[in-house]
Length: 316
Image (cartoon, rainbow, N blue to C red; front, side, top):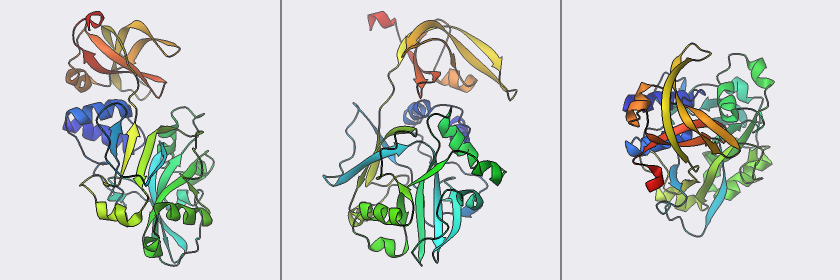
């Protein structure tokens, strides 16, 4: 399962995920899988590590205690990147990669961020490249755009960079995190504080300690800062019966299993088929013909089987 989740993590950060965030979270939690990003052949290290956020889910265990000064912002669902300025000029831009190293995308980010800022030291700005929700699979579109070989094609795409932090240089002297974002606005950046950004995909809310000194004092685990977390809501699932499994050939030629379901209504759609990814996924969920399963529509679009339900649901 670790190999499967490693592959899923790599696919996610390369912009072509093989499962939804909800499915990944369920399997990662069950198997205590805490890897951030994936290890691969990267171009360069980040000046400051890009940590992931610890997650809390509405209605489940209590989220971490941050105090009354926590600031709440939208959790944008795009592609995280770091942008570095040196001597006031854009020096380097990297994909998130494994959080320690990433791939160079400087030529592409020149179309989304200022070429110069009023800061002569070294500063790393982190944020999210996002695409409008009107674009199908907007998160994949944004992430996949960073992997394009053609800079010209990238420049023609409807993308935006929205910053959520900066580190280094004189910025460390600022008292509050919100001061950092105000500074970013003065340099010409969009930030998560300026709007609710409802026109872009989101997958929760971010709670963060505002005091920069307290945030630094709280420190980090091996994977997450202790001064911030993401609050997410698990999508409501619907229970139905697995009638059969068929195999289909995708556009790329990959053969994958598809669940044939007793038709069920989710939202305004009637669902009778759902992806099962591969045999490892079927085995992990212990699926068999005739069992009951929970189905969600990932992002209110793609039907997904997320777990097996034991017993007759009418008796539960």
